[in-house]
Image (tube, rainbow, N blue to C red; front, side):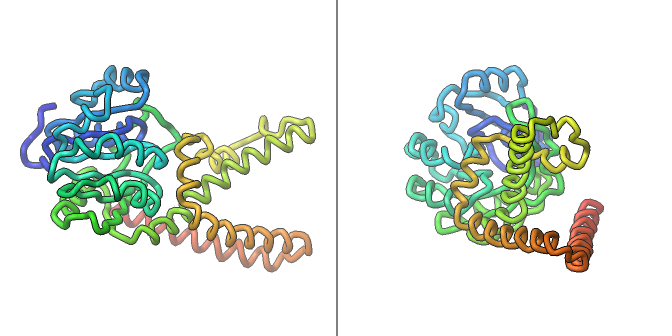
Length: 302
């Protein structure tokens, strides 16, 4: 890559995991010229071969140790359940003064998994760029994925302040709006705005499929925009989402209890023909959603 010097934040960046997020980061670094070298590693030979063919990294290694050797920034872009194994492999090969970050949708469990493997002189800065699509694989990434999206960082005891500032600058150069919050707050927020909708989408597709079998009729062949739009995220990576739900158990149980109570209340309103209650709820939630849309439009126009 022919990098200009003015935007350089890191000399060498190692991306572990070359799916949607990892490939988008690599392309974003290349486009915005914020590192001199970008290295990569993927678990499967087919993924490594495809990423090499696409050519958006300087080099893709066949082993974790080779990929992180002499790297200034290591970004874990793998399912959260694999973090501990990765850190067991690389912790003895990390350069002093280097930074580890991740992109996982769960933070407290990730800190618990990684903390003990972070060597002295190395910072771990848990992170989560809130951006994505339902697509996966090394060919799915694009540099603009992060533009005007939020990135949440959850610094803790193994986080150096100067390193935190560098990571904030890194995500901002990729186009993101960065906030720092506690791991616990992050996990509850994401359980509400991301994890629950994914779980509902998976369950909705499963419910329709079971009804088809039970009634011996093809319901889903009539699926139009509403059903397909709502269940779009059910096409997401199953392994990634399995790990997210199992590693954000506390927050998920809390939000599911509240959601199930709400469903029971809706069921009761329908069962008892309480149209006034349904209409009132629908008006309130419509207004709340419109306010969310307005705030997003305002953010995008700034």
